Image (cartoon, rainbow, N blue to C red; front, side, top):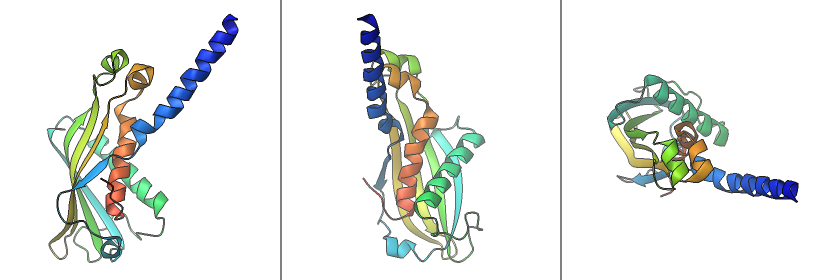
Length: 183
């Protein structure tokens, strides 16, 4: 009887973890701050470059954090549109280059113990203003306020870290770059 109860609890725990696993890594939100570029407009760019910065509540972000997120964004773009960009490190002012500026404004890993105790406490946040621009023409193509928040509680909440949430943030930026921004 007790072994059946243990197995049942294990199954329920596993199912809940699988059900909730999408929350941390699902795409964040990319709210347009200016006109949104269409996929057709963005298709003229064959090269990509990125720069990042951290201000405000993201000031404690390390260069390594920003590099990791940039690599995730690149990975997501390459996996979804493998032939889309010929180069991912082009000089920003080279014609045909779409330059992405990611200005992080909030990067908080929250508190795992607080998330364990109650959902909504100890939240994880990643926020940035993302600008797509053609620097060879001195033209801003689009701007987005990209946010990703994680607030689940319990064991799943405690076991989830900011690196898990970075996946969803990177997905939202990739959506914007590919002209598939979802609000």
